[in-house]
Length: 325
Ligand code: UDP
Image (cartoon, rainbow, N blue to C red; front, side, top):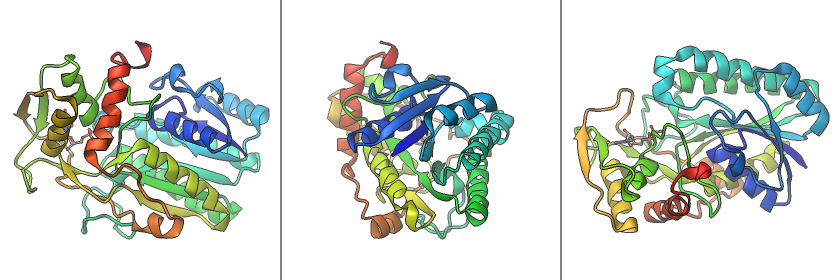
């Protein structure tokens, strides 16, 4: 099956592309390289440089490649930025997604996997968070993903457009060849590893007065290769209906526990300093992934935080300057 992966030069999209190719699928990546890296695209994937804002380019892409399914990663993805530049999210993420959806429907594509987010659950009533939790987007970023989920709901009802919306918690780790390289980097694990690499003096801990076991925020870190497997399982299950899954390990680790795991893995002391809370950070986010485990048999292969960090460390040591190094 030919699969279109938008954002396939980015962190998660590039790993999903790698795993799709390993599973014997044929992939075309569409990416504007605004955040992704050409070198991250698997050499056996076709690559089309382009922007989802350009309807003509999207139309040409479908005409040339005739994908049977779409996995949609290309997006602005930063919660904090979305609170400062809402139209980049409530505008671009949505209109670009609509361009893609309209073109997919027009070309008879009926299989779609959306990269969605835990930011749908800003104020969870129950931890771990399952799919019955009420949706309260935490930012224009989360809202943009929720709106795309709603479009998908209607396209399913009207056109039989089968979709999976995968709400990720904290993607982390690396495969041998593909890892996390954002500019600017804002995520905890790569920032801590930059300290171990000597590129940063210390790590800032954003608040240690949360109602958690050590006062720092608890998050659910899921290995990017485990996420990729979930995408493949979800895609293959679409013929029996659309679905929405929360995706995490079901295990929460505090910021201090992550920093401790990084110290252990790297052998570096990693100095830390406690700074103010980051606006918009909930104290605890942990996923219940029991639905995807039960329905699709998904099992994380790397549930342990030290293993996750170790895979990221291997990649960062081999690519100290990221893909451009
Ligand atoms: N965090 C931190 N220092 C940093 C970056 C992140 O203390 O330099 C915290 C952040 O407040 C959150 C957790 O680490 O509680 C994970 O943040 P990240 O940005 O990696 O992912 P998010 O949970 O925002 O998706």
